[in-house]
Length: 178
Image (cartoon, rainbow, N blue to C red; front, side, top):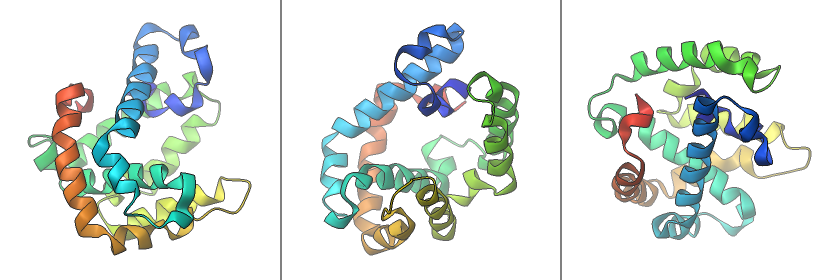
């Protein structure tokens, strides 16, 4: 779980310097990203978003998928309790954060304080996360307005995720959520 969550902090081949379980998480994250980015449903979903979002459309879709997953978590995870999952995730990520970055522990603390994982279930939570993400980029970007894109194409995006999830589940299984 920690390797998967912090994978974006592991650049290039640095995963080779990690313990095998962390490296496996990083590689799983990269495989999921690659699978998602090349999936026909995801490519079509990008076209639902205004072209002004540019290269950020893929990032927005990742957050939107998190929204639909969080909103119907028990359905998509075969009954897994979202509150228990979030508590377990916070515990695991806190215990392993420093392996990936000196500030990673602060990220987990902010995640827990802000209730990010459960907050994704609401559009207001998505909006808050996207505004925070927008501030991390050194240049102007449209991410802070991403919740409007979710709202404007909500039904189509919801249907896309519902069709995409079985393919993701078949490719990677739900074991990675447990």
